Length: 440
Image 1: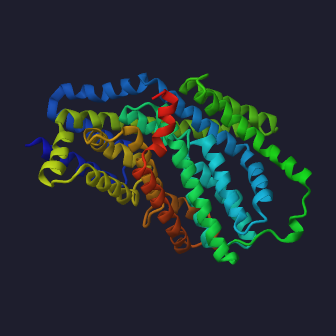
Image 2 (image 1 turned 120 degrees about the horizontal axis):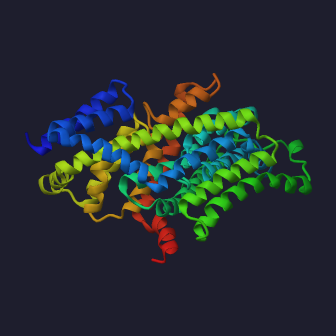
Image 3 (image 1 turned 180 degrees about the horizontal axis):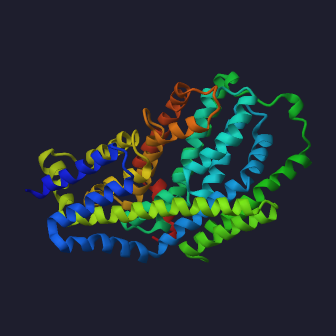
C-alpha cells in the first residue's frame, strides 16, 4: 500500500469518526496510535508517549490555563457590566452608538480574555437585552454580538494562536503581536459598517432619547473609571510583555493575578466566583491539552509517512497550481470545515498537512497563522452549523429565531472577507509589529 493511500485512509477514517459524534481528541488520537502500531509495530507505541512528553515539556503551554483563568475571572466577577455602562453613555447619542459600544466592549474583553465564548456570553447576557430594549433591530444586533465576539480568537492573548504556535512550532509572542493590527482592522471595519448602515436606516439603531442624554460631563468622566481596571489588566499583561519586562509565561501569570486583584478591588471575589472560575479553567485547559497531544501524535505519523511531500507534489506537479492558488484553496477548505467543526478541531485536523506545505511554498508561517485565525472567524459564522450560530441560539431570547441568527451574520461575513483580503494582499498589516518588536 502506498504512503499516499495510507495518508488518505487515515484522514478519511478520522473524519468518519468525527461525524459519528466522537470527541475530537479521541478520534484523532485513536487514528494516530492505530496507524503507528500498524505501520511500525511495537515501535509505533512510542509516538503517543513522545507526544505526551513533548507537550509536558513545552514551557509556553503554561500560558494556556493562565489566560483561561483570567477570562473566566473577569466574566464571573461582572467587570464587563461596568464597561458596557461606560460605552452606553459615551456612544449612545449616535445612531447605532450602542452597537458601536458593543464592538468596543468586545475588543476590550478580547484583549483580556483570548476566547470567543466569553465574549459571546457577555454580549448575549449584558448587551443584547439592552439593545433590544432600546429598539435596535434584532437581526442587526445579533450579528453585531456574533461578529464582535469572534475577535476573541484574533486579538491577543488569543488562545487559538497559542495552539497554532504549539502545532506549527512558531513563537507565540510573535503570533500575538501579529494579531494586534488585523484585530483592530476587523473591529474598525465592523464599526464603519454599523455607522453607514445606521445612517442609511436610522430605525435599525436609534440614538438615546434626549432625556437620557442629560448627563453632566462630570458624571461622564466618572464613568470612565470603569475602564481603569481593564486598562490596568491589559497593560500589566501585554504592555509589560511588549516593552520586554516580562516573558510570555510571566505576562500570563501577571494577567491572571491582575484579574484576581481587580475582582478583589471591586468587592466581587467571593468563594463561588473563585470556585466557578477554577472549575471552568480546569475543564477547558484539560480539553485543549488532550487535543494538542492527539494532534502532535497525528502529525508525527504524517511526517513519518512523508504525506506532506506527496500533497505538495499533487498540487504543484499534477494539478499545476501556483502557491497563491493553493493558499486560497486551503482557506476555502477551512470555511467549509468550519460549517461543522470548531477552530481547535479544524486546526488539529489539517495543521499536519497545511502548515509544512505553507512553509514549503515560501509563505511566512506567522502571517499564515493570522490568515488561519481570520478564516476561523468567518467559519464560526457560516451556516448551516457555524459554531457561533448555535452559541447565539442557546443564549438568545425566544423572540430571536434561528432564521434571524442566520440572516444577521450575512453582512458581517462580507465585512470579514474584506478584512481577510486586506491582510492577504498586505502581509505587513500582520507582520510589521512582530518585525518591529524583534528588531527585524
